[in-house]
Image (cartoon, rainbow, N blue to C red; front, side):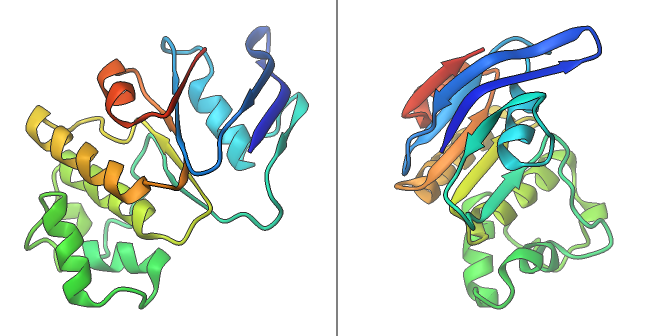
Length: 188
């Protein structure tokens, strides 16, 4: 995937100016920078959810994407398992889903409605849903926010295993996340 001369402004505020970068296939690229510098805007443009003012994104045709947004974007009235199945269908058995839930510290949560979960549990559900989807490119916008330190470390380890050899772009403020997960770091 490649971004070529991307420009984006919101009114008088220019957040991206002639941004050009390669995102290597099969690698995780981290995008870092201060708040408001355009990281999430860049992610939305790369996903095709927000138009650039100018420039282009080169991505193989028919690429499937999966994403964790800044907001969890879960269906609160559905169970954790049902939220995951929205993107996986019947690809995973209930036992396999339970295994993934165990790996991110959500053991016993498969049948709980999302509305009953804490913020950190919702975040892990959203991340798990994105990781288990079939995708060619994974987009992660601050995927570990709201997690306590121990949980964050174990979920980062799980994410690293699940993204090995896959193309991913992650927005983060945390240099430790970059050091642990990223093959390439872009600073905006």
